Length: 92
Image (tube, rainbow, N blue to C red; front, side, top):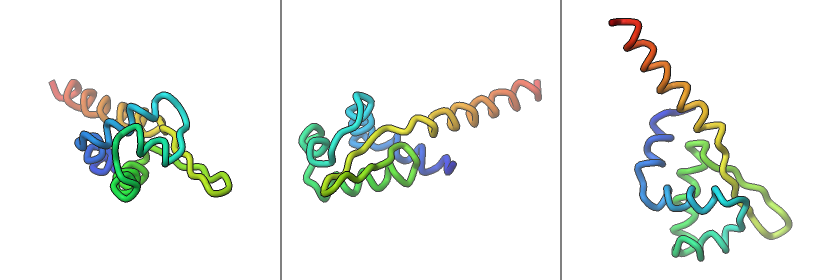
């Protein structure tokens, strides 16, 4: 996991809006663009950042691309943050 990419993706308001929509379930790129009010090219940019960070994955079905939330990266981030807490606690 690249923690910097993960945090960068969360730092972007539009990226967070996309993640919020995706928590409802799988959605096509066209429907996702409508829901968040982005052009296809703007959506593509944000989806690329989210995929790089590991927040989402895509599934292709014929001519359609569907996106889903991948929460395994969240589990990894929580473990990383907890390791910081343990290290800090061990030093006291």
